[in-house]
Amino acid sequence: MDTTTKNALIIVVALVFVGALVFYGLTYTYFAPALPGKYSQGLLAKLRIQDDTLGTLVIANINVGLYGQTTDTSGRTVFERYSTLNPTTSSSYDATKGFWIASVDAGGYQLVAYDTRGGSAVYYPVKVDLTVPSTDDVDLEVVPNPSTAHLVQRAAITKALAITGYNTTGGFSASNFNVTQGAGFNNFTSFRAEYTFTISGLNTIVKAGRIYFAKLTELPVTRVLVNGQEAAIGEDTTAGEDGLTGYYVEFTDWQGGATATPTVVYCTVYFTWSTVAGTDTNMLMTLADYYEVQRTTIKWWAYSTTTTVVDY
Image 1: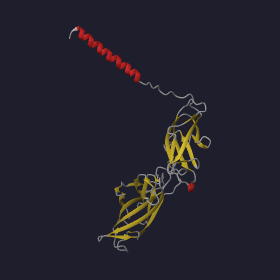
Image 2: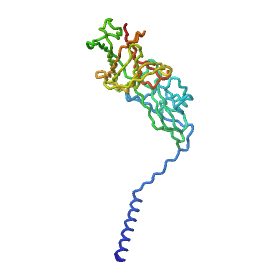
Image 3: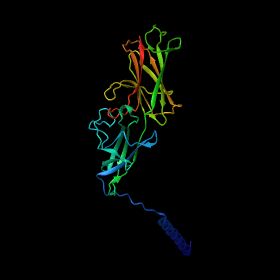
Image 4: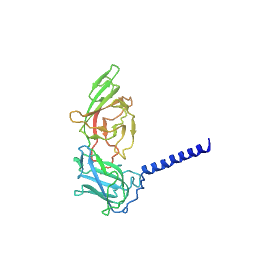
């Protein structure tokens, strides 16, 4: 390559480079990092609480608190039965502003909102992590992130139970669990109990939890299916934190359906008669919805139960 050609090539490369720099300068947008606001104490956090069942804002009959810690000195979270956590600050609804207002410093919090109407309550409690930013607003008003917490109404639950007893001949409809061989029910040696839960209420829910079955010496649980899917069987041996003991399986959220088309959930339980004599007289099934919530000042609902005679 002669000198003239080489110089021309260098000029072309230089022009391309300069053009690229010019294009980059024209298209590049500089985003300055966000700076903290001037005020970070004594802020007024503006919160909204929405009823996701009705699609409306909730402005009364709930308690809304912000917690600066997620566990108490014993390591218990706010929903645990013996938790001693108290909110850093509570909030009240300001009808003029249209927000729940909490006086708080900037930082991270856990918002907890729950229904305060006792026996007439409808909302499951909610727990949401949020951040309150600092601000340059001289009125000290800030909008947390997220700014809205969502409540949902607990669905209506109705139950039914069908029992089938089995012997060497086959399966027969039974009205209870008769575990005495040769007495009344054709020497049954095992049982299949199908608990049917009907979940009603459009846009309502039955929150995830556990289905408990009493642990009986003469009638142990051997298999459980929820809507046809095999469920792992656990055992709860202490009642201290939840007031419950026995065998249990876990379930996920169940969405409610319209009155004409409710959601139906089937829980099929297999029991085997044990030759070890027992003294129990009832099989108790407990539907422990939203099992995470055990604190009695927050949990307003009673668990749905079915008691069935164990006949001797």
